[in-house]
Image (tube, rainbow, N blue to C red; front, top):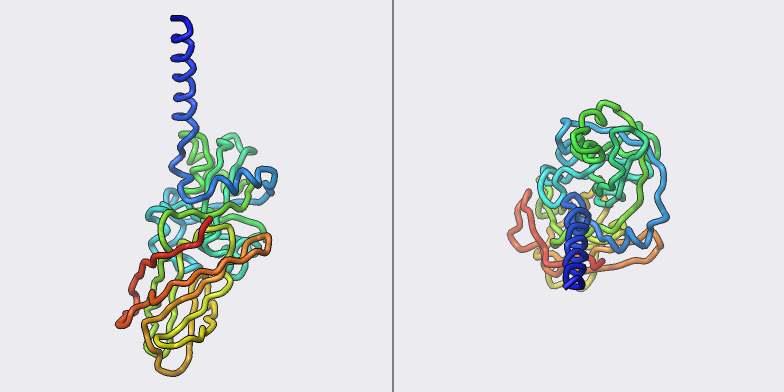
Length: 269
């Protein structure tokens, strides 16, 4: 009987630990295996916040994501980045774990954010967090106290994004039959999107697109283009390895400016 009692107590303690520490809804779009592998790679940075205290910074910002930054899976956990983080738009969509410990209001717990904007005039390695993300670094009930500090030191590390959904293409409002541009969002993985190519209907050749700004890519042929379009995306990780995926005929004939198209593909983590 004593053995059974001991087993019940152990099981209860294990369940209690899992309940308290095993699930954190704030960390729903990152890959924990990358975090574990890079556990010794925390680096120092500075941080501020902008926008409404409980908001998402700005809608889209310099990456062009629009109002999606306030909706799942991001849910306002986003940040603008200084030059080294934003990286001329190549850093758009990158995921980072951040934590603070030096301020009394800091919880010391990690929060995962995605880069959605640029921080002009900020230090090279700087996170200008949304008000909501900045407050998420605080102890319970201490969000306003931490935000009142204005500027804090934190630690950060790059982690692999895992959004749990396919890549989404949002066609630019200025796109037409001769000029195609699209914003690309929700790429999984720990790398940066460095190359996008387009293939027209009934053709074998891929045509390189150019980064217009942020997460927006453009192809301006100056001649009539023939949809449906296939898109080929290449992502390069911090260790130099590359992955390429193809979304065949993802942009349909009859596409419209402003149309949001959910693909059936994403990078594997």
